[in-house]
Image 1 (cartoon, one colour):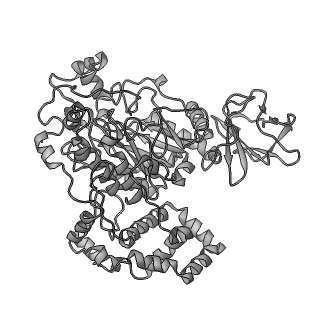
Image 2: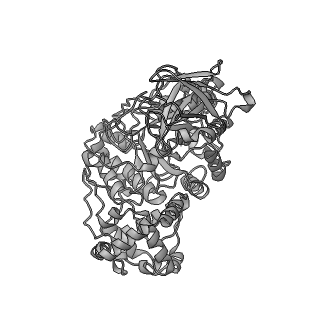
Image 3: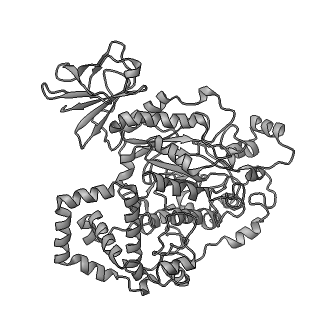
Length: 630
């Protein structure tokens, strides 16, 4: 995380040893090999498809042309058929059940991407200049049935699966796939061309945020990397030790490591031998979170996947010798309905290419074109994350990063274009101004409604986002603090992203696991007041402190989350306007209706049930559900 710091990098930094960042590979070698090959969605992607063994160019394999597709969709008979299907109550309920399944959502998403890749009229690729998408890694062949992950089928497997796109989508399976796709898409989406976004903030900011993100409300952030090895002070260990030379960090290294020990020497010690993706996934599921965001690369530049653009400084070549991103992504998608997202740092503290660009006042763009942007295209096409959580602009403007060009590709042509959400950290000046949802600053909490969707990211460890061995018990947020953060954030229209830091050997420390499971237990009782809610007309109560409101639109319920159980057993609320003989009050997790008395035209006094601690529906905050209130 950036911690709101202004970092000055130009012409600064510690002395660099040859090959220090990437093992024995020198930077001259790296810089000569990092230019991405032609892989943008024009000639590059078509050439890639032609070159696959046993594969062919989708456009030449009998795929439906854009004109033919529009002609079919535009026929009156087809429209009436779709309307009859969509108008059937039985069909609607069946489709809702299918759409509620995470597995079905991902399957339909893959079908949509294949239809797009084969049915869209061909377009000329955009150039790689500023304001245009950079060359992207090859889009996987559309007939590949592999889940997002590191391994794609080999040539033999691809040839066995299908000799052409047309064959891959033929037979009874094609009919069912087409029916699901037609039902899952609203009729206007079939008959009208999808809007395309220009590489400008005005166009990109107008893109509607996919609905799932606002409905999710709660996610888990995971900060994991080489900084987990020293696990001292902060995930900014390298910067504080070698750039700012803070005394505690220098002393720590002098005391515990031999002279000449470099930060790169921590790489092989990042072992992850206890990392069990399924165990992590089960803990994430128990937390009640609806999405997870993993740091694929922090400011140190070490990637948790085997990036082609980070030789000998990634988890496949150094340390675990495993694709950690792929393992967690696969497990999350196979075992839960959580949405999988990736954090990615734009800049790297001590990368010579970035330092050279910074010295040139960012008038040269060697680093983003050869390192940062290719990595972004790589993780999107390879792992298909539904959240891109960008960070770390290094004080460089968004034009240096070509952020608008990348986002235009992401929203228009990427395999996750329909579901992906992005944040606001895309260059100096973009935070809290441009992007999908706003984060504004670390631990952001405005305390009031904002005109745009926002997210508050809060670390369970008050002092660090990564794991640190020197943390003390008071440094950790209690579950009461987390429940309060969640209630306040959701009542003001935000999402809460709760951060944990695993150890270098791949364990989620028990204090983090406990907090995750405690929040999950609270959500089992009070989840109706969180998931899928909207802000009410009042965010907090004007009479009793510590009461936060949300609104459940489908049930028409007002949820009053109160954090302190009154000793008197009487709770006064100043905001609701009850209706005599109609308003009902219920305590979440308790069966009986509660008695209440109106306080004039506005406000009410509610008699809470007399319960022992063992009878309480939960221990750290409670929800009153009010129906039929003005």
